[in-house]
Amino acid sequence: MPFPPPNRKMIYRMNFNPWLLAGFELKCAVTRVYGTALESKIQEAVKGNGTVKNEIKQLQSGDCIISFNYDLLAEKILRQHNKKVAVANPYSDTTNLKDAILLCKPHGSLSWKQWSPERGGSPKILNMPMQEWKIDFIREIGANILPGIIGPVPFKDEIIFSDLQLGEVPLFFNLVVAQWRSAIQCISETEKLVVLGYGFPPEDLHAHYLFAEAAAKRESDKELEIEVYEICGQRFNDVKKNIAEVLEPASCKYRCEYKGEACVFG
Image (cartoon, rainbow, N blue to C red; front, side):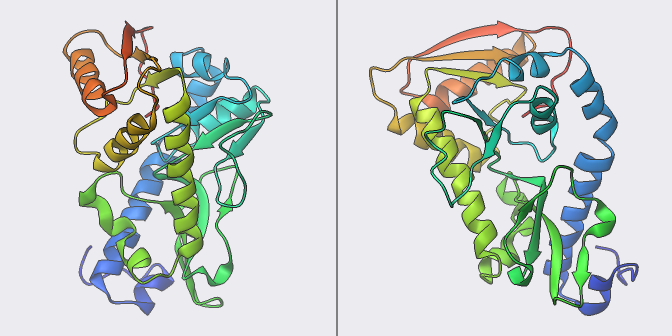
Protein backbone atom coordinates (compact mmCIF):
# COMPACT_ATOMS: atom_id res chain seq x y z
CA MET A 1 0.00 0.00 0.00
CA PRO A 2 1.44 3.43 -0.91
CA PHE A 3 2.25 5.89 1.85
CA PRO A 4 0.76 8.29 2.50
CA PRO A 5 -2.40 6.51 1.32
CA PRO A 6 -4.45 8.11 -1.48
CA ASN A 7 -7.67 9.88 -0.60
CA ARG A 8 -9.70 9.17 -3.73
CA LYS A 9 -11.99 6.83 -1.77
CA MET A 10 -13.76 7.27 1.54
CA ILE A 11 -12.12 4.20 3.08
CA TYR A 12 -8.70 5.87 3.03
CA ARG A 13 -10.08 8.79 5.01
CA MET A 14 -11.86 6.57 7.56
CA ASN A 15 -9.29 3.87 8.32
CA PHE A 16 -5.54 3.77 8.83
CA ASN A 17 -5.18 0.08 9.65
CA PRO A 18 -2.52 -1.08 7.15
CA TRP A 19 -3.66 -4.73 7.33
CA LEU A 20 -7.27 -3.87 6.51
CA LEU A 21 -6.25 -1.49 3.73
CA ALA A 22 -3.90 -4.12 2.25
CA GLY A 23 -6.83 -6.52 1.91
CA PHE A 24 -8.94 -3.74 0.43
CA GLU A 25 -6.23 -2.94 -2.15
CA LEU A 26 -5.92 -6.62 -3.08
CA LYS A 27 -9.65 -6.87 -3.73
CA CYS A 28 -9.50 -3.75 -5.89
CA ALA A 29 -6.58 -5.22 -7.87
CA VAL A 30 -8.33 -8.57 -8.37
CA THR A 31 -11.48 -6.75 -9.51
CA ARG A 32 -9.48 -4.72 -12.01
CA VAL A 33 -7.64 -7.74 -13.47
CA TYR A 34 -10.42 -10.36 -13.48
CA GLY A 35 -13.21 -7.86 -14.14
CA THR A 36 -12.62 -4.91 -16.42
CA ALA A 37 -9.30 -6.02 -17.94
CA LEU A 38 -10.54 -9.54 -18.75
CA GLU A 39 -13.99 -8.61 -20.00
CA SER A 40 -13.11 -8.40 -23.71
CA LYS A 41 -11.46 -11.84 -23.66
CA ILE A 42 -14.44 -13.32 -21.84
CA GLN A 43 -16.77 -11.89 -24.47
CA GLU A 44 -14.61 -13.48 -27.18
CA ALA A 45 -14.84 -16.85 -25.42
CA VAL A 46 -18.61 -16.53 -25.02
CA LYS A 47 -19.11 -15.67 -28.70
CA GLY A 48 -16.48 -18.12 -29.99
CA ASN A 49 -16.39 -21.88 -30.29
CA GLY A 50 -13.68 -22.89 -27.85
CA THR A 51 -13.27 -25.90 -25.60
CA VAL A 52 -14.79 -24.30 -22.51
CA LYS A 53 -17.92 -23.20 -24.35
CA ASN A 54 -18.36 -26.55 -26.09
CA GLU A 55 -18.12 -28.43 -22.80
CA ILE A 56 -20.38 -26.11 -20.83
CA LYS A 57 -23.16 -26.04 -23.41
CA GLN A 58 -23.37 -29.85 -23.22
CA LEU A 59 -24.21 -29.76 -19.51
CA GLN A 60 -27.64 -30.94 -18.43
CA SER A 61 -29.75 -30.45 -15.34
CA GLY A 62 -28.22 -32.32 -12.43
CA ASP A 63 -24.64 -31.61 -13.58
CA CYS A 64 -22.26 -29.39 -11.64
CA ILE A 65 -19.70 -26.72 -12.57
CA ILE A 66 -16.91 -25.96 -10.10
CA SER A 67 -15.04 -22.79 -11.03
CA PHE A 68 -12.00 -21.63 -9.07
CA ASN A 69 -11.94 -18.39 -11.05
CA TYR A 70 -13.34 -15.08 -9.90
CA ASP A 71 -14.66 -14.16 -13.37
CA LEU A 72 -18.09 -14.89 -14.84
CA LEU A 73 -17.13 -16.87 -17.94
CA ALA A 74 -19.11 -19.99 -16.97
CA GLU A 75 -22.17 -17.98 -15.96
CA LYS A 76 -22.22 -16.02 -19.22
CA ILE A 77 -21.93 -19.15 -21.37
CA LEU A 78 -24.72 -20.81 -19.41
CA ARG A 79 -26.90 -17.72 -19.79
CA GLN A 80 -26.24 -17.58 -23.52
CA HIS A 81 -27.58 -21.14 -23.89
CA ASN A 82 -30.56 -20.53 -21.59
CA LYS A 83 -29.39 -23.08 -19.05
CA LYS A 84 -31.11 -22.97 -15.68
CA VAL A 85 -28.48 -22.46 -12.97
CA ALA A 86 -28.56 -22.72 -9.19
CA VAL A 87 -25.72 -21.25 -7.14
CA ALA A 88 -24.80 -23.40 -4.16
CA ASN A 89 -26.15 -21.68 -1.06
CA PRO A 90 -26.68 -22.41 2.65
CA TYR A 91 -30.45 -21.96 2.55
CA SER A 92 -31.53 -24.91 0.40
CA ASP A 93 -30.40 -28.41 -0.51
CA THR A 94 -28.59 -27.89 -3.80
CA THR A 95 -26.72 -31.20 -3.71
CA ASN A 96 -29.61 -33.14 -5.24
CA LEU A 97 -30.69 -30.81 -8.03
CA LYS A 98 -32.61 -32.37 -10.89
CA ASP A 99 -33.93 -29.30 -12.71
CA ALA A 100 -30.86 -27.05 -12.86
CA ILE A 101 -27.08 -27.00 -13.24
CA LEU A 102 -25.32 -26.46 -9.92
CA LEU A 103 -22.65 -23.76 -9.86
CA CYS A 104 -19.99 -23.85 -7.13
CA LYS A 105 -17.32 -21.15 -6.77
CA PRO A 106 -15.17 -22.11 -3.76
CA HIS A 107 -12.99 -18.99 -4.08
CA GLY A 108 -15.95 -16.65 -4.44
CA SER A 109 -16.94 -14.47 -7.37
CA LEU A 110 -16.67 -10.87 -8.53
CA SER A 111 -20.44 -10.92 -8.94
CA TRP A 112 -21.01 -11.51 -5.23
CA LYS A 113 -21.59 -8.12 -3.61
CA GLN A 114 -21.03 -8.17 0.12
CA TRP A 115 -20.94 -5.70 3.00
CA SER A 116 -18.42 -5.74 5.81
CA PRO A 117 -19.68 -5.59 8.48
CA GLU A 118 -22.89 -7.11 7.12
CA ARG A 119 -25.09 -4.16 8.06
CA GLY A 120 -26.26 -4.01 4.47
CA GLY A 121 -27.64 -7.54 4.59
CA SER A 122 -26.80 -10.85 2.94
CA PRO A 123 -24.42 -11.05 -0.05
CA LYS A 124 -26.16 -10.32 -3.34
CA ILE A 125 -25.43 -12.33 -6.49
CA LEU A 126 -25.29 -9.98 -9.46
CA ASN A 127 -25.37 -10.66 -13.21
CA MET A 128 -22.13 -8.77 -13.77
CA PRO A 129 -18.81 -8.37 -11.98
CA MET A 130 -18.49 -5.57 -9.48
CA GLN A 131 -16.64 -2.53 -10.77
CA GLU A 132 -13.59 -1.31 -8.94
CA TRP A 133 -14.88 2.23 -8.44
CA LYS A 134 -17.84 0.87 -6.45
CA ILE A 135 -15.59 -0.82 -3.86
CA ASP A 136 -15.43 1.57 -0.93
CA PHE A 137 -16.57 2.46 2.58
CA ILE A 138 -20.14 3.75 2.64
CA ARG A 139 -20.57 6.18 5.49
CA GLU A 140 -24.38 6.00 5.51
CA ILE A 141 -24.44 2.32 6.47
CA GLY A 142 -21.04 2.19 8.18
CA ALA A 143 -19.77 -0.70 6.08
CA ASN A 144 -17.45 -1.52 3.19
CA ILE A 145 -18.92 -2.71 -0.12
CA LEU A 146 -16.67 -5.44 -1.50
CA PRO A 147 -16.64 -8.34 -3.98
CA GLY A 148 -17.16 -11.68 -2.22
CA ILE A 149 -13.82 -13.35 -2.91
CA ILE A 150 -11.25 -15.25 -0.88
CA GLY A 151 -7.58 -15.93 -1.55
CA PRO A 152 -6.86 -19.20 -3.38
CA VAL A 153 -3.58 -19.74 -1.52
CA PRO A 154 -2.52 -19.07 2.09
CA PHE A 155 -0.24 -16.22 1.01
CA LYS A 156 -3.33 -14.22 0.05
CA ASP A 157 -5.29 -14.76 3.26
CA GLU A 158 -5.23 -11.03 3.86
CA ILE A 159 -7.99 -10.75 1.22
CA ILE A 160 -10.44 -12.05 3.82
CA PHE A 161 -8.53 -12.56 7.07
CA SER A 162 -9.56 -9.46 8.99
CA ASP A 163 -13.25 -9.79 8.12
CA LEU A 164 -13.53 -13.43 9.14
CA GLN A 165 -11.40 -13.12 12.25
CA LEU A 166 -13.56 -10.25 13.49
CA GLY A 167 -16.72 -12.20 12.73
CA GLU A 168 -18.05 -9.37 10.60
CA VAL A 169 -19.25 -11.42 7.61
CA PRO A 170 -20.97 -14.58 8.92
CA LEU A 171 -23.48 -14.66 6.03
CA PHE A 172 -20.71 -14.52 3.44
CA PHE A 173 -18.79 -17.17 5.39
CA ASN A 174 -21.85 -19.46 5.27
CA LEU A 175 -22.15 -18.86 1.52
CA VAL A 176 -18.54 -19.91 0.96
CA VAL A 177 -19.00 -22.97 3.17
CA ALA A 178 -21.98 -23.96 1.01
CA GLN A 179 -19.78 -23.75 -2.11
CA TRP A 180 -17.24 -26.10 -0.56
CA ARG A 181 -19.81 -28.51 0.84
CA SER A 182 -21.66 -28.81 -2.47
CA ALA A 183 -18.46 -29.15 -4.51
CA ILE A 184 -17.16 -31.92 -2.25
CA GLN A 185 -20.49 -33.74 -2.42
CA CYS A 186 -20.64 -33.60 -6.21
CA ILE A 187 -17.07 -34.78 -6.72
CA SER A 188 -17.55 -37.60 -4.25
CA GLU A 189 -20.53 -38.94 -6.24
CA THR A 190 -19.72 -38.20 -9.88
CA GLU A 191 -18.58 -40.79 -12.40
CA LYS A 192 -16.86 -38.30 -14.69
CA LEU A 193 -14.78 -35.21 -14.01
CA VAL A 194 -13.85 -32.85 -16.86
CA VAL A 195 -10.89 -30.59 -16.09
CA LEU A 196 -10.46 -27.42 -18.15
CA GLY A 197 -7.38 -25.31 -17.55
CA TYR A 198 -6.92 -26.15 -13.87
CA GLY A 199 -3.57 -27.68 -12.99
CA PHE A 200 -4.18 -28.64 -9.34
CA PRO A 201 -1.17 -26.53 -8.27
CA PRO A 202 0.41 -27.68 -4.99
CA GLU A 203 0.27 -24.09 -3.73
CA ASP A 204 -3.53 -24.12 -3.76
CA LEU A 205 -3.85 -25.93 -0.46
CA HIS A 206 -7.51 -24.99 -0.07
CA ALA A 207 -8.48 -26.71 -3.32
CA HIS A 208 -6.28 -29.71 -2.51
CA TYR A 209 -8.20 -30.14 0.73
CA LEU A 210 -11.48 -29.95 -1.15
CA PHE A 211 -10.52 -32.65 -3.66
CA ALA A 212 -8.90 -34.86 -1.03
CA GLU A 213 -12.02 -34.68 1.13
CA ALA A 214 -14.18 -35.58 -1.87
CA ALA A 215 -11.91 -38.52 -2.75
CA ALA A 216 -12.11 -39.82 0.80
CA LYS A 217 -15.91 -39.84 0.60
CA ARG A 218 -16.03 -41.83 -2.65
CA GLU A 219 -16.98 -45.48 -2.61
CA SER A 220 -13.83 -47.53 -3.06
CA ASP A 221 -15.22 -49.54 -5.99
CA LYS A 222 -16.64 -46.55 -7.85
CA GLU A 223 -14.47 -45.66 -10.83
CA LEU A 224 -13.82 -42.01 -11.68
CA GLU A 225 -13.10 -41.10 -15.28
CA ILE A 226 -11.13 -37.88 -15.64
CA GLU A 227 -11.01 -36.05 -18.95
CA VAL A 228 -8.27 -33.43 -19.05
CA TYR A 229 -8.10 -30.60 -21.55
CA GLU A 230 -4.48 -29.60 -21.47
CA ILE A 231 -1.46 -29.08 -23.70
CA CYS A 232 0.16 -32.46 -24.26
CA GLY A 233 3.69 -32.65 -22.97
CA GLN A 234 5.29 -31.74 -19.66
CA ARG A 235 2.42 -29.54 -18.57
CA PHE A 236 -0.04 -32.42 -19.01
CA ASN A 237 2.29 -34.83 -17.23
CA ASP A 238 2.53 -32.44 -14.27
CA VAL A 239 -1.26 -32.02 -14.14
CA LYS A 240 -1.80 -35.76 -14.37
CA LYS A 241 0.64 -36.34 -11.50
CA ASN A 242 -1.07 -33.71 -9.35
CA ILE A 243 -4.50 -35.20 -10.03
CA ALA A 244 -3.33 -38.71 -9.16
CA GLU A 245 -1.91 -37.47 -5.85
CA VAL A 246 -4.98 -35.44 -4.89
CA LEU A 247 -7.70 -37.88 -5.92
CA GLU A 248 -6.22 -41.15 -4.70
CA PRO A 249 -7.53 -43.74 -3.99
CA ALA A 250 -10.05 -43.16 -6.79
CA SER A 251 -9.54 -45.28 -9.89
CA CYS A 252 -8.96 -42.85 -12.75
CA LYS A 253 -8.79 -42.88 -16.52
CA TYR A 254 -6.94 -40.04 -18.19
CA ARG A 255 -7.42 -38.65 -21.67
CA CYS A 256 -5.40 -35.70 -22.92
CA GLU A 257 -6.93 -33.48 -25.58
CA TYR A 258 -6.12 -30.01 -26.76
CA LYS A 259 -8.23 -28.17 -29.32
CA GLY A 260 -5.84 -25.38 -30.16
CA GLU A 261 -6.90 -22.55 -27.91
CA ALA A 262 -6.16 -21.46 -24.37
CA CYS A 263 -8.88 -22.07 -21.81
CA VAL A 264 -9.81 -19.14 -19.60
CA PHE A 265 -11.19 -21.43 -16.92
CA GLY A 266 -9.85 -22.80 -13.71
